[in-house]
Image 1 (cartoon, helix red, strand yellow):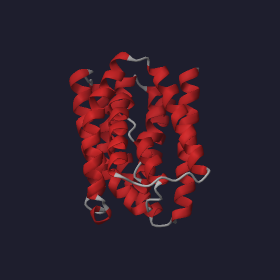
Image 2 (tube, rainbow, N blue to C red):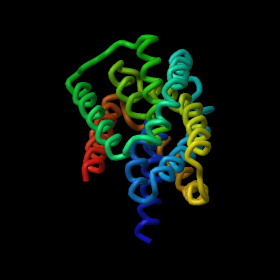
Image 3 (spheres, rainbow, N blue to C red):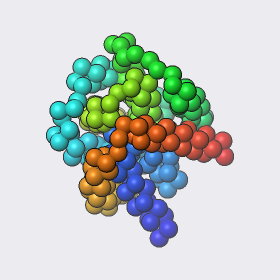
Image 4 (cartoon, helix red, strand yellow):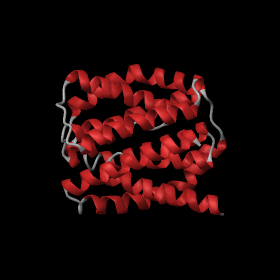
Length: 239
């Protein structure tokens, strides 16, 4: 019962964050789902539910999407996707978590210290490649996107809409790649189905939250989530 309750809490909170920020589900849910499921199951549940959230929201927020950046991210991700599944199949998952956590923590500290970068075509492609690799390896494309958009001072409306649009592609393709190369099982699909009502509730509550937070609070929340994710992945990878 405790595992079921924890699963429900994870899904609800992650769904609220995903709806209100555009990136919270995979960043928050994946580390905790790894406590309840095997790596492949946790990643595939995350991919299924994140894809559902993106589909549910995309029409409503379509006017805020920066399609130029989305196209570049997609092109970059095409190169990152096969790298990610190779890493998943070959590399020790704990070492991968440690490496990713250190990168997240260092870059987040740079953002807190007001480090800023300008957007460019080349950087869009690189970020798309990193997001693609992280999606098929650990189901978590959010960190490179969030770090990049925060560093370029992207408005919260554009950040949310652009990342969700990109997720439509990256999550669908990553799920297909995971199923083909890793396989799937009924636990993934039953758990995803059971979680669906909580995802819908999270969509409703997250939309309310999004309308009530300003850009400053949004940025602080971004840093908190990134620091939490980096520290959690580091501890989990070490111990």
